[in-house]
Image (cartoon, rainbow, N blue to C red):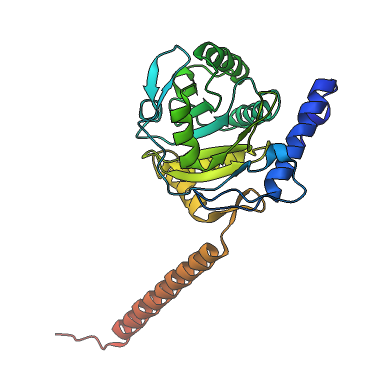
Amino acid sequence: MTARLANLATPLAALALACACALAHAQMALPPHAPGEAPVVAEGVPEEVQGVDIAEQLGTTVPLDAKFRDDSGKEVSLRDVMRSDRPTMLHLGYFRCPMLCTLVLNEAFRSLRNVDWTPGEDFQLVSISVNAAETPELAKAKKIGYLAEYDRTGVESGVRFLTGPQESINAICEATGFRYRKQPDGEYAHPATLIMIAPDGRIVRYLYGVKFEPATVRMALLEASEGTIGTPLDRFILWCHQFDPTSKGYVLFAFRLVQIAGLCTIVLLATGILWLLRRESRMKAAARPTTHS
């Protein structure tokens, strides 16, 4: 829990945080299952959040031709809003969400303020509502609010808030393994996640929770970019790391360190052998008698 959340004093904020924590706990309690299988009913989990989880679909391509509406009301496909030469950060939720979606998006934008890459230039940020009743007008209001908070110029084309028909919502949720549940009061219980997508539409990484370290977000975007953003040094650093689901971040990959150490050893040995051969050659040349005419 961040200090900012801990200092929220209003009853509404306290209720939102309590509900988010309860949902996160329920999500962790549900074992994963393959696509198409019925969700496992977990003992001790409230009925309202049964089946709410993520069945990871790493490597699956999202439905690029699925139709939605952007904040202007224009019909667009995912292909239209996900650039073919840049990665995409995808958020699924709904725009009237009183708790979890707000926490996830707040933290995502807070983290992105500390990342030196910019939406529209280096990556796309796409938020899709799973509530088919929500409108482009609501999406526009949500986008304006977050862009004002993000306070970085020239990012409008890289931040997209979409609404759409149930058919398209079902398609993106099935492809990503995002499983949510509508509640009797009309609200939705859903997982807290950001999904990183490669330029060709393949799912590369899931980041979970309501807190995202800037370094983790940066590494996840770099991983999803598949070399289209970042410097050679960035890609070398990523090569030395792997994603650890336990710590929800990237950690040094021990095997990579062994590979680097082995390569360094080979280079040092080769350099040493070459130096010895040259030294021996010079010594032989010095010992060879000089012929005078």
